[in-house]
Image 1: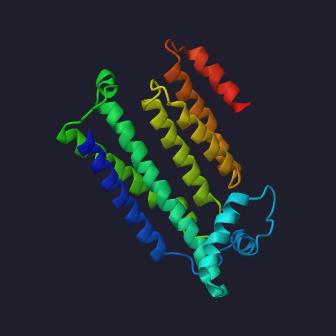
Image 2 (image 1 turned 180 degrees about the vertical axis):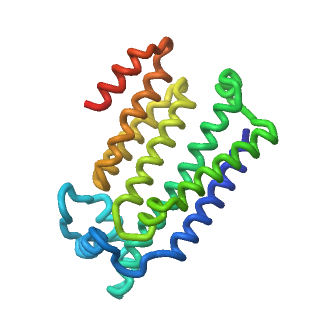
Image 3 (image 1 turned 135 degrees about the vertical axis):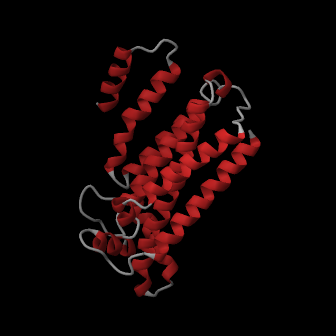
Length: 234
């Protein structure tokens, strides 16, 4: 298991580095259309943008703008770079989500729930290949790549969504352990922060609720899943 985890982490960070390098190479040097100029200016001056606001994004954007050391010409590039970094981390989490799901699909359930589920060499390369292809295909898709280049909230919003899904899958694997609820607390914390980026992240809550229901319920039913879905949407 350790060898698989090392390879999984290594390939994941290589995918992250590749995505980040391309994003920084193609970064928007100034402000793009629509709300980008507003978010860049509000990050620099800590102002209030249009409702519902984006306090988490603005605070992180302000921290990035401090790296300009008073050179205002660098502020827009640095805030845009925040989106590039956020997108690259979203790609990293997506890679780990795909490899975790691939491992669950290839390994028998009783084998996966042991402490050391080690895939074979062929299975390992299939999992790594699926993760790399899936993550990089998403990384260089038109809409996601476009959002990674500009000072908008969507890149960081994608990062928050990918992060909470990955954390939920970590919890799902460790749900039987006494301290597994710490992952649920972390999810609540990240979702709370993500609301300060964009309300789009709340769309992940029904999916997280279904994972929780089918993992914790020993005898899940279709109607139980429907009820969980309805309650999570309220």
